[in-house]
Amino acid sequence: MDFRITAGEQETLFTIVGHLDAGSAPTLAELSRGLGREAREDVASLRRKGWILARDVNEHLTVIALSPMATQAVSNLRYGRRAGG
Image 1 (tube, rainbow, N blue to C red):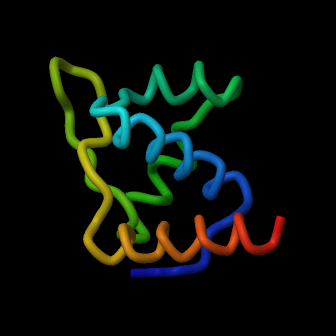
Image 2 (cartoon, rainbow, N blue to C red):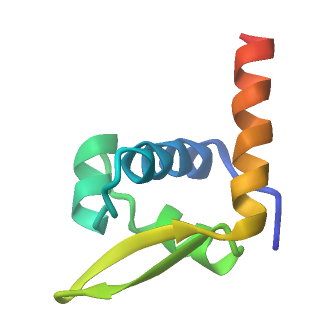
């Protein structure tokens, strides 16, 4: 797993986490709407780096989970967000 992610990837990641925490597996279209920009490159990069698990559901790319290591990394990032600002 590549732990280096860009600011845009981190924004996309936290949007994904929000959906997953709410019990929803977001599609690429839902992520793009939520971010107000195209999410395809960030989702592809996060998938390639091992952060997220995604598959086609009803012909729509859908993020179904974070990888186990990403779950811990997100917890650390969230803590850093609270402690740092």
